[in-house]
Image 1 (cartoon, rainbow, N blue to C red):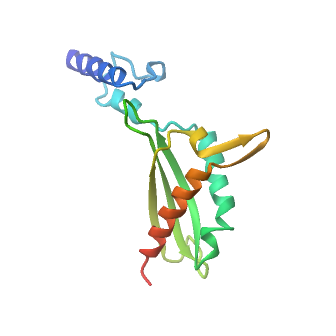
Image 2: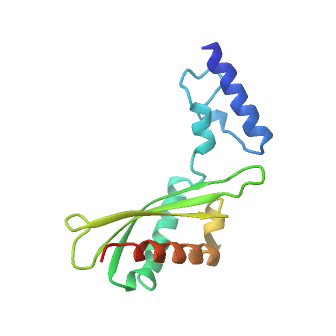
Length: 157
């Protein structure tokens, strides 16, 4: 156990020196017996479940006017962001499924893909909020457009 305490203190020290913060109040404390607890805290998504759901809804809403206008339909399943630290920009990864309009996502051929977009750290880097209205940040929309178009072009014909 002493080894895990020392390893945990080292990881926490490295994370703090590098400009990363670890939320030790959420159960990742220095007496934790589980290996990797502190590294898990460092790699946790910077989006809350509510923020993830809001961003996924905005992506799905804009899909009908953009990517989903083509031959395929999309289902957006997961969005995770990492804040980055010490000179390393953050990134977000969107996981989604592509399927034909002629089939159902549950029964037809479905292709699971993901887009990792650099330079995005969390909710405010993805979403513009003005009063009660929210929309995707233009830079995030552009990054998703490029990535989704590349992934769609790779699908079997």
